[in-house]
Image (cartoon, rainbow, N blue to C red):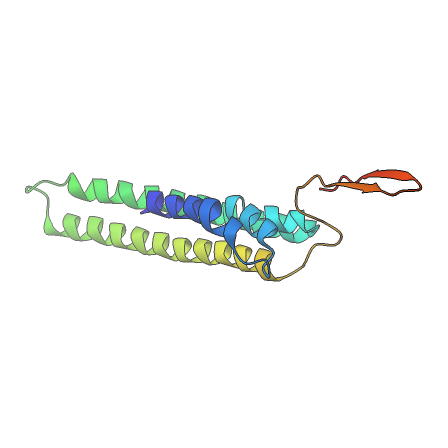
Length: 154
């Protein structure tokens, strides 16, 4: 399930986010889709970027740790033999269920933080005098004088 979610995030960030309507802040959106908080950092919201990015990455890390814990609890349950007592089966199964419930809670919270990251990057805090990474060259020619302008913005 974790691999499917990662594939979904990559699909969204590569194919969907760059093609969104220009009413959205798509530059910040695709950045936040790739790395949570990067879009906020791009919009010069540094404290928010560190909080959102760090929090989201921390929550997904804890989700992975709780997933590993639940898998180890299930492995302990599956190693029981028919000579084990019923109480051992019940104890190991309840340990697995509680670990799986904790993992589900962290997954929901981490996914919610990631979605908040995307919504915040797309709709809130328009950048101040920031254009997307482009290198426009303005060339102006007139009959009485020749003027060449080169504007570099990122």
